[in-house]
Length: 78
Image (cartoon, rainbow, N blue to C red; front, side):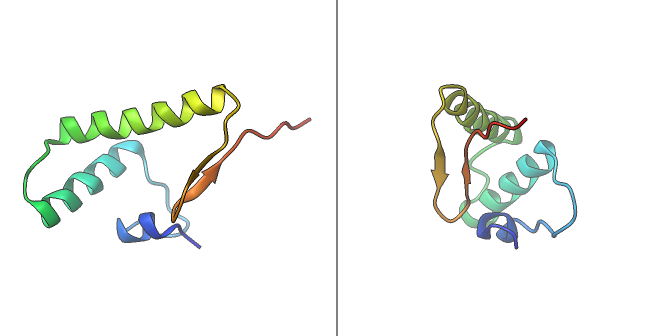
């Protein structure tokens, strides 16, 4: 089952979504709901910043919970 956020963006189960695809879909969603307030380049910066914040928190051994989306945490494996 997909997270509600990804389902709303039009992602299909079993298919890959690249970061570029995510930027494209988020930019389109913002344009549909609020008008052309953000460029694709600025949207890419937001997506990059979000992912960088997740990576930094994980590097500091913090768990992350984005309600309605998912949980990120480090797991030690053999």
